[in-house]
Amino acid sequence: MSKKQHIKIATIGGGSSYTPELIEGFILRHKQLPVSEIWLVDIPEGKNKLDIVAKLGQRMIDKAGLDIKIVPTLDRRQTLKNADFVTTQLRVGQIDARILDERIPNSLGLIGQETNGAGGIFKAFRTVPVIFDIVKDMQELCPDAWLLNFTNPSGMITEAITRYTGFKKAIGLCNLPIHTQKKYADLLGVKLDRVRVELQGGNHFVFVTDVFLDGVSIMGRFIDIYLNKKEDTTMKNISGMDFSPALIKGLGAIPCSYHNYYFHTREQLDKQLKDFENNTVRGEVVKKVEEDLFKLYSDPNLNIKPKELELRGGAMYSDAACNLVSSLYNNTGDIQYLDVVNNGTISDLPNDCVIEAACVVTANGPIPLNIGKLKPEIAGLIQQMKSFERMTIKAAKTGDRNTAVSALNLNPLIDSDLLANKVFDELYKVHKRYLPQFDL
Image (cartoon, one colour):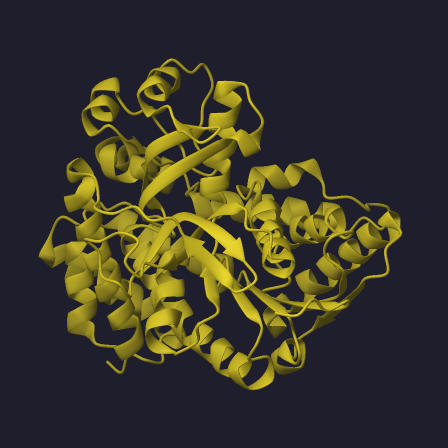
């Protein structure tokens, strides 16, 4: 893309508590990324939060002495018109829908989590129709813009776009890989840019299969460093346990934080069931955190991103999102970790599926670094999860209950066909108004 001197950012879900971090990211990069307008759009139910976030964002920009205009609005089409970059960070049904995604599976003795298991499936079901509408508007109003999707489950949402809409400029984002890279650099005592990780898998189900220091593989040595670490490297929004040395050495790979739900399923479920009884499932905790955050955001004297935002669990979101925007704009050729179409990068996964991988970012888009075959020790797990994701995406597109129940059965966190049917019916009942594709 040609380098424009005035960049318009359109953020869908602009009333999110994450938005101040995004605005901070653009402020910090303003010399290399001349953003002039940040349009924040939300739904009518989110108008109050949208107004609060927009005012805080404008105070942050004014404090920095920059000429950037923030425009809060409920008009999505006006927001998208002539946008250069579109970021999505939406939650269909808001936080109360997340709480249902967690509590209903828990009530049936299943893991309840917004991106994994039954909860993640129904978040995808609710989100895909909305994302398709956004893409349709983009194809009309800003066909050359990049769509940067941070909406969870990010990999599945991005794959739904790339497989079913014909839109070629969608990239998925997650703060987990950059968080992992930073933690590994800290463990090695070096700067972030000296470390690169090789990833195999998909969003929230990805393994680190190699670690490079100054371009040289150090995986064998690094596994020992990782196992002897003194600090927790798990994401703040996951109540995690350490993986055993036997598991990591046996696999020759390091699972991501979200693998806690798959390799510590019994322990995670025990904890979740206690939280369920105490009305402290993660969504309920987040709801309280967000109430406190928006009280802070409402302070007319606040003109910085408050440290309390770290409690929300989105650390390094702005680094992931704003680095990508800057690299696409400036054709930097640096390496970032993104959710992109496989296209042969991993030879034993479908070409049209979306993977999470290290990519060289150019003005023409990200180019994933070739991996070849999956490690045999983890290949079966990744292929099963990819089959599950593809079935979920198909069900989200077609609204076919049989496909949806089959997808639930393919997920390792759902260990019974009877429960797969039951959890589908119960989640469908409470989310029906957000699921127009299902006609049951």
